[in-house]
Length: 81
Picture 1 (tube, helix red, strand yellow):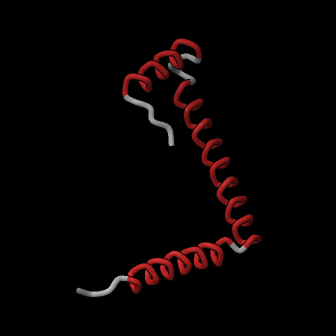
Picture 2: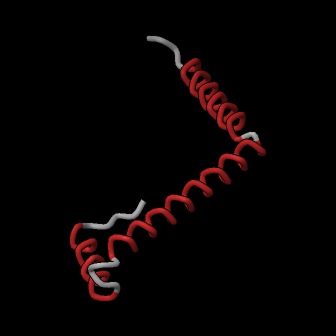
């Protein structure tokens, strides 16, 4: 998702230790991770319900079938030598 390198993580942790304090930092990080996980789960639930409502799986299958048919038609036009 995000491309964060080691140096960026180190800077974030250092700022976190300075602002929050070393005693509360692990609890703070744990609560942030829990919140992000809940948000991600809700987002995936929302996305899957929308996909189910619009019939995304059938649309994907139709597009795949159309592309395969075009591929077969292009291959069928060529004459073997």
